[in-house]
Amino acid sequence: MKINPYLFFDGDCEEAFKFYAEVLGGRIDAMFPHAGSPAEEHVPAEWRSKIMHARLVVGDEVLMASDAPPGRQDAMKGFSVSLNVDSIAEAERIYHALAENGTATMPIQQTFWAARFGMLVDRFGTPWMINCEQAA
Image (tube, rainbow, N blue to C red; front, side, top):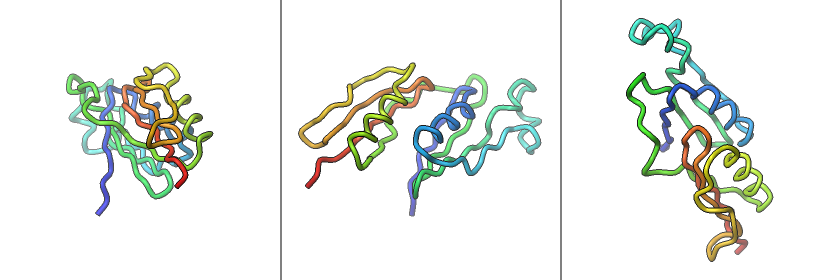
């Protein structure tokens, strides 16, 4: 069994996933707009270029998403996408890249359990936790 987060965006899924692929070193395996699909007729014309389903692969992990239908997007809350990285430098790089034009909710810093830990909400509204565990 695998558990994969599925995010809903307010029309900027494609931009967000291209950014995440760049920052996280992943690859987009799927990016399907409504246009050309059976769903095309069920969305407004201006929404047909929006994403019906996207899939980002980072290592062995998968993050999926789509653009929520017009009027059906709620702010992302009550969860965070948690990243665990192997080095302090990588934790700080990812944190600062995702935090740009977003909101830092906990600055990246050393904690009693981690060499680095920080929390933020990126410019697309996705909440993140970045963690680099301390050496054993």
